[in-house]
Image (cartoon, rainbow over all chains, first blue to last red; front, side, top):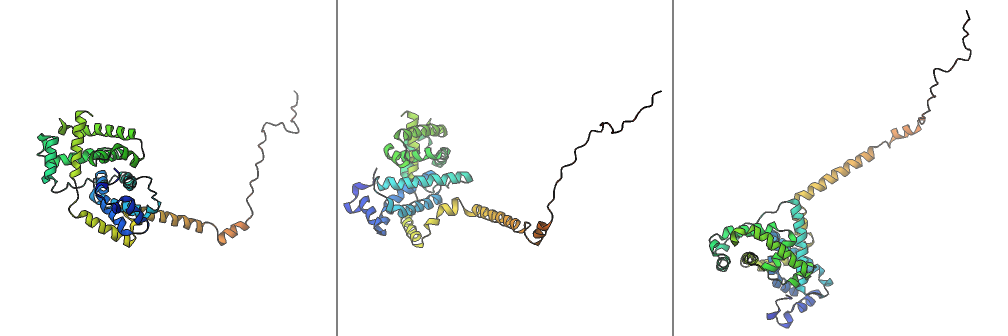
Length: 199
Length: 116
């Protein structure tokens, strides 16, 4: 997953925007922020389960990327590069937060229970439990938080964001085999936490 | 992938519908520009909240007090006129004690015992 390049004109391609940004074009970098902030924010949000943390961290990730842009040589895609920055910063943040033992689960998103797509999917996933989306979401958050940071990272990227194994291995700088084994282990753990919704 | 694992995946995928409010990312870009203009990004979130806040301040205050105490000890350690006076004193010499003689050593003039 190099970028959302299917609908891009050549002048909007990541490489062009990066090159312009490296020459000091801040508007070009803004376009990269617009392009990648939703997915980056999503990854960080699912890793931290906290909106404020996710917002501030995503801001910091783009700020760091902007400062380091001169050193970006294009060996990987911009997407992989900024995702790697985001993942590293989030993992470091979580280490510090865990040491302080002060994480708090975010309030459940208001309105998600009425989200048509969410209801349909929940029904498809398990019709017996569709009535209790609130409980499901709470359990999902708890299950996710029960994972170690690195396991949560692969689940977030693969299961929630649909990033392929190969791309995750580049982002995390581990082998594909490691990504797969972490996913396997994480799924086993999640099964235990979500048992009541599976049977 | 077995069936329970597929079920888990389906459930976890529901989380992709947790999205921020409408217009959030417009504000995000605005906030990013403001932060860049203010130039405060290097001291952003990680420094201010995670590692920091009151916790760090306490450490700094504690370390400062400890340093001040250490400095006070160093400055008040015998170093002034008293110290000079002390230096003029004769050094104390510890002389080794005389070895204790054996109390049963024979006297130089042995007592003669008259014979009956």
